[in-house]
Image (cartoon, rainbow, N blue to C red):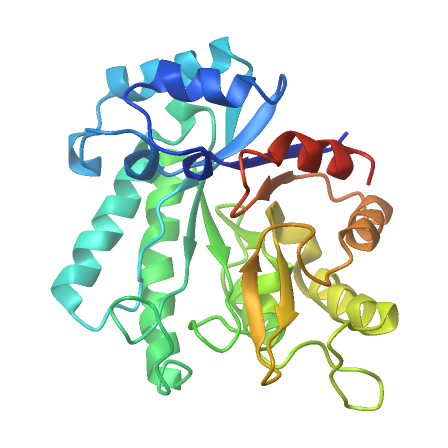
Length: 292
């Protein structure tokens, strides 16, 4: 059975967990969300000030309206160029791991960062020494995840971040062969900046189904068994042939129906969370995805 939901902060910001839960409940029962607490709740405490009471109350308010957390968001830069700031961010992630099970979601998610503090493109992010820093950060987080019986969720971004390709993600998954590390699969994020490659080496504005299937199957063959959540959005190429990769579902050229079909064949059943969703059209979008 499909678990289709959304990023909570795409609905806006709220004064209380009860208000957030009510906003989610509009779209039906049993809705998974990606929850980044400080992006969605006004006056939320810093992670260092999380308490069992705060997290339990948040869980209970969401559950009362039928919502649940599919990804506990703590998106940091684990290769931040300033070691002191990097350590602060890793400590914040560890706090999320500590409270994840109380929230009902052991999976805490992050991307893999860049040599730029804001995670934008830096030409040296792909260097081996940066990958070594990432591995040390992930090692620290996986150790904390094992302590708290939680899961580190890692998401790749092509070209821009340290883990930027299918091969790099597969290597990370192999290095950290533990149930405490899983993958958040965002196929649009992983698509190269110049689009999907056709059999003849070209790249089309609207890729062929064969090109998409080749890309998707390469991903799923490499790390499909480690996927714990899916991000759903869309892309197209701009006038210069470069990817615009932050479009809402249905506004680009990715064939989500075919991807869901392949996930079913492989028995990969994980929360599928819309990104950049428009609340005005969200009900229709959820309805369409439910038919896939």
